[in-house]
Amino acid sequence: MLLSVVVALILTPVLCASLLKPVPAGHEPAENAVFFLRPFFSRFDRIFFRTRDGYVRMVERSFSRRLRYSIIYILIVAAVGVLFIRMPTSYVPDEDQGILFSQVMLPTSATLEQTRKVVGEIQRYFQENEKEAVESCMTVAGVGFSGTAQTNGLVFIKLKDWKLRNRADLKANAVAGRAMRAFSHMRDAMVFVFPPPAVIELGNATGFDFQLLDRGGLGHEKLMEARNQLLGMASQEKRLTKVRPNGLEDVPQYRIDVDWAKAGALGVPITSIHNTISEAFGSAYVNNFVQAGRVKRVFAQADAPYRMLPKDIEKLYVRNTTGKMVPFSAFTASRWTSGSPRLERYNGFPSMNIWGEPAPGRSSGEAMQAMEEMVARLQTGIGFEWTGLSYQERMASSQTFLLYAFSVIVIFLFLAALYESWSIPISILLVLPLGIFGAALATWSRGLHNDVYFQIGFLTTLGLTTKNAILIIQFARERMARGEGLIAATLGAARVRLRPVVMTSLAFFFGTLPLAIATGAGAGAMKAIGTAVTGGMLTATLIAILYIPLFFVLVSRIFKGKQPDNKTSEPGPGSPAPSEGQKI
Image (tube, rainbow, N blue to C red; front, top):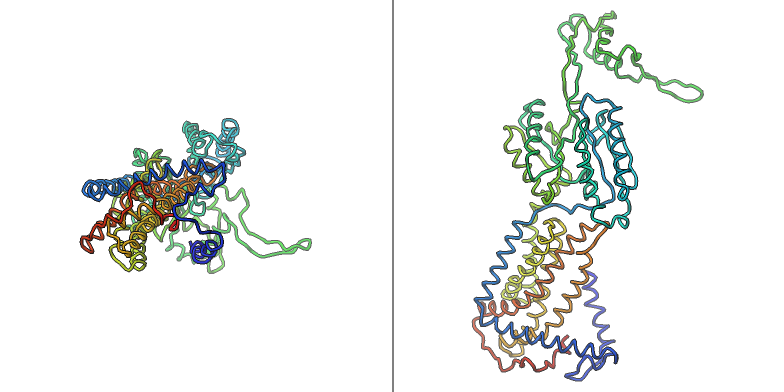
């Protein structure tokens, strides 16, 4: 935009003075065209002039049928409101990035060998059943998005180039859907296949990223109960799919209860108790030694046969303050229990991470709304937070109204400063819903969402609609300054400025049309912004050009009173406009 301003103020006047030549009044463009193009230009001009005359007659009729046109306008504004209410919301469109992830979760009692078997089956499925779409697979056992555990696994699926996947059944979401149906029959593991999020830095999975929090200090068991209850409700919710916990399940743990009174009576320090069991079953760094010119580290640890079973703890001894060795069994008792293998916190609260996706035909905004409704039915003290891409979506949606309102206010203030008038900005702002109507209708009819890219297209449409209104109203004011009446000046401006309005609108429309029909890498973002701009441009041209003169006349009369309608200065529908060639 800054560059276009510089070009318009500096280069365009120079080019006009250098390239444009004076022409006689009433000339036809076909006269200066190459001879084999003259029939085309002549026919085009005849069609355009008939269209222009019909447009001027429609504008003139609208002045005497204000009520009918006002009712149509109110219906369009109401339709815009309905479209915004019914349009699903999201942050950014899902993209086919050429890769898929497969998350594997086995029961807590599963072994690493079982995990390897499952990820091997997943790899064979993609390599044998999805040969047309999949280029390669890489498997990892013992590690997952939720952490390191022998029950977790990952499979990274690399898809072929977009040019080789030009059919709808070879797209990433189609491949993931078929894989989910195939893996749903597995009994020994839960397998989820999904593409990465549109912004990979903001998470690891598409859909929503949800944190269930223990705000009331209820404890780990209550939080697990709330999580399981939430997952049960999510499995029955039609707006959700692939809802799963992204965390490590509770595992068996061997708990050692120390009788601190006995330990104190035996003269055993607390640090000695902790260090002994840590060094024996974990390890502890002692010092370095040099061997063959290389410095190596020394770690102390109990030998493998003496740290394999829980009863091996009874073989440990701790040195007390008098230098004597005290058996561990003298001041401890042990028992089996279960618990989380790691501490999960979010904003300082104990948390459980849950992933999920919207059901087919639903948006991430609807899925997030469903999760919030279900959390409200849980016990008191359980809260939630959004993280990753979902947090950004909530922040963006909360600022949407302020963004739109600020944009409209800026447009109004600029127009008021430009024309030094309050009536002209108001007449232009009344036209803005007509452009918004096309953007919202096109986006909703294609099943797209109200996301960040739609908002960009929305704001662009506001500017383009304002531009069309300025092209007509500016000339109407100049004609009124020369003494023409309000109606005559408005009709004359509509006649003269129809060509540049249509020309610039069609140029912008066809310039953004490739975005609306884009395919391949990044097509989601391009379709979102292209659909909004092209749809808004159509209604801002086809509908708004009828209402721009009408609103200008109505608002001018309200602010300045009724003005004389000097129709004698208006050229007839079939007569040429001598000033058109000069003013274009």
